[in-house]
Amino acid sequence: MTAILSIEGLEKRFGGVTATDSLSLDILPGEIHAIIGPNGAGKTTLIGQLSGEIAPDAGSIRFKGADITALPVNRRALMGLARSFQITSVLQGFTALENVLLAVQAQDGHSFRFWRPALSETKLRDAARAALEQVGLGGRAAVPAAALAHGEQRQLELAMALAGQPALLLLDEPMAGMGPEESARMTDLLAGLKGSVTILLVEHDMDAVFRLADRITVLVYGSAIATGSPDAIRADEAVRAAYLGSDSLGSDS
Image 1 (tube, rainbow, N blue to C red):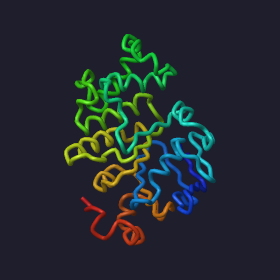
Image 2 (image 1 turned 120 degrees about the vertical axis):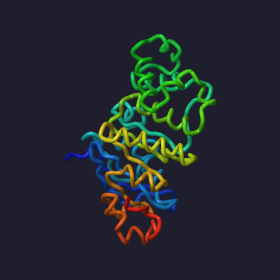
Image 3 (image 1 turned 60 degrees about the vertical axis):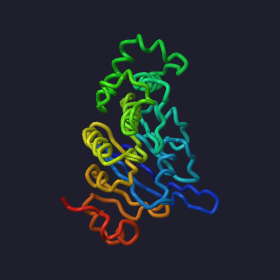
Image 4 (image 1 turned 180 degrees about the vertical axis):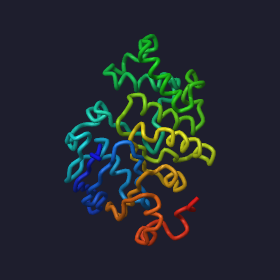
């Protein structure tokens, strides 16, 4: 199977700190591929390089066969690469529907300055409502983002990312700050996306990772020490020794 995203020899340093160390990795179409590792392993730096927010010092990134290493964020987004952040980035003063409309407009080539007319454009409004329905917020379209619970705001951010029908979704800790019920709801949402959109997932919730991921890559000091199925990662002694610990891999159930 041809990779939808290929990373080859990627390197990034900040002063004397190596955040990405000659990393090579292929992400396959339709899979949920999780990136895990201790704090400081370079996970968020990797996401930043893939999205175009951080320029690598060396190496290459290919998306759908094209070299995107030097492309800016907006060009990558128009090619079908979307991301969410560790910290919720919705516009608090706008309703849920208006937030998603902005995302639809951006993907459709509209200017952000003209978001209000989009409310009367059936095509854009229907696409925004469909994205809200997809994440379980169909009944919250008219609610200001500031009035949504934290978990709902993360669902809204996911709707914004999905609104442009991306080919690859970069998710940076989508469960951050969530309680158990909210995390379970988000895990169910992501499970429902499996096969319809390729997802690269950075997440500290190991229960979610091992439930969702088709493959897992373990980063330590910017290097991939293992890539494999959840069962293979769970059984990998090097992974246990370097990061997860003998009691933190979850059960086999």
